[in-house]
Amino acid sequence: MRNRKTIYIVLTLIFSVGFYLYDNFSTEDFIETTKEKTSNIKLDLSPTSTTGQIIEHAFYKLSYSEKDEQAEWVAYQLKDEDISSSNFKRPYFIKDPKVLTKSAHYKNYSKSGFDKGHLCPAGDRKFSKLAYNETFLTSNISPQEHKFNAGIWNRLEQKTRYWAKKYKSVYVVTGGVLKNTSKTIGSEKITVPNYFYKIILDYQEPEIKAIAFLIPHKESKSALYKFVTSIDEIEKITGIDFFPKLEDSLENKLEKSSNYSNWIFR
Image (cartoon, rainbow, N blue to C red; front, side, top):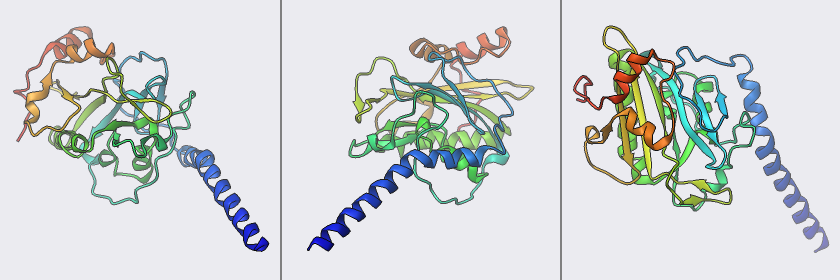
């Protein structure tokens, strides 16, 4: 009986140490894989940060909000050659080693009723294993209702990939609206946004154009164009200046418009 009890204690210690090592050192392994390529960002038109904590990964940038335990925005370029059907093994979500204040633990989502909703989608980063794995950092996820995540949000992600192929390259900025919401999940109190936005810029001559979507965080069967708004409107409710690196007259023209007639939706 005593021997059996000793075995149980030893096994419990082994499992406890294993989970501790995974939680605390898997991020170190991730850092090792990124040493060769610290950044592959070719086009950087990223927004301002209201939090002062901008994180640059190899294939996207983000502004992390510690009080909301998620990114207020994620920004990246998506090119036609990035669209791939590679089938990498789906990794576990891990904490972001570059977030100085420490990003939230994935366990906050357990039994919360919400998906771990990607901001930079894994489907946009299938051109390399590193790029794909980067999207599974917890700084790149936000609580999303499943029918929203698998429904209209997924439709918008697919449409973004369609535009990347159609227009050869687009610049994407996306996130949840973190203001005016009090709902949270988990012990770290991760904010649950009431709205999500996605802004897409086609920065190609001769016709530079932008389109912005603001979508309520709930299931919807409505057509995507019904959620088109102006970038100015999203700036108003987030406090973020989305394209400060553009020349002023171009920025003003793009950000005040909610016209989508020059974007192909079919």
